[in-house]
Image (tube, rainbow, N blue to C red; front, side, top):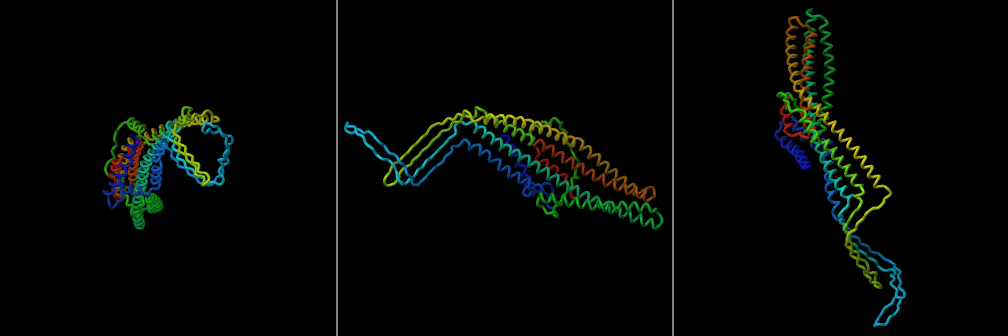
Length: 458
């Protein structure tokens, strides 16, 4: 039931993403557009899909272990067979007689055929193997679910990397224009004797620094655009991403214990580790002494003969019955294999407990990122608005002589940094929200739509 639920949820997400893509913005590449395009271009996702398809064949392999094994044999050739009977006694009309006769075949033709059917009835080894194969299919399904959620998180992060790089470039360009204007004003005022040479030097130094920042921002944007383009197949010129600045961030204040319970019961990586532990336990059963006997239904039909014109002997055999095999001793290999499997169970148990610790810690980090992130976003927005007010006040103060050019340069820089910090905090909040949902195996289309609704064009 769990596997069917995971399968339905995973494929529902992908199907709805394709549907939503038809409704998304035509002139801008939003999250729905990017995720839909990446389903046919992201190499990690495509590899995970093929691996999943291969893993699902394990169910068929498990079922095949209990189906009959049917084989047909046939042969033809020439043969020699030397047989002689001496002193054979026959009774005819009450009178005994002794005769010698030859049944040899010299350079005769030979043919044979056989049909063999073996139907397993009981086999502890096969039983353990079939359960192991079913577990491997379950593992493949869990890996596929984890790969899909990882795919969404990776693509959203790449998308926001481009958004942040674009905003950084835009903000740096705006700063550059503002400082160029200040430098021109400082130079004009210096020539008029209305401002000291220090103002001109400070503006020039700031301008040179911004030019270097602009080059770095352009390089960073190109790299991040290339990464997103490779994953989606969308050309860089068509990657008109948007920025998550619409609306207010809202956190669903469910207690951490609720989320921890969801993570422990639904985390794909933890479920995967638990299935690997069950697989290791099946290997112990496979090599246990009670799994060594086997019983099969054996059916054989065999025929041979027609050795040529001088020997037309025909032979037909048909056998049907049960065969029971009980291994007595195989040099200690079974015991050694069983001991190895027991130790591997202990190792997998420790790994499962470690995964439980890791996902619990990751859930704690994501939860704190949300509880504190909402307040952080609001605080940084207030700081940005305050820095904009300070910048405007400093501009007025510089015109009347109460503030220096350096004061205005600092105010301009602080306002730009505050704006970028606010956007970065919004992105972190949205990523933590998606990450917490993914950790609990509950990353749904509604959450993707919710994040998509925060996007605005530049």
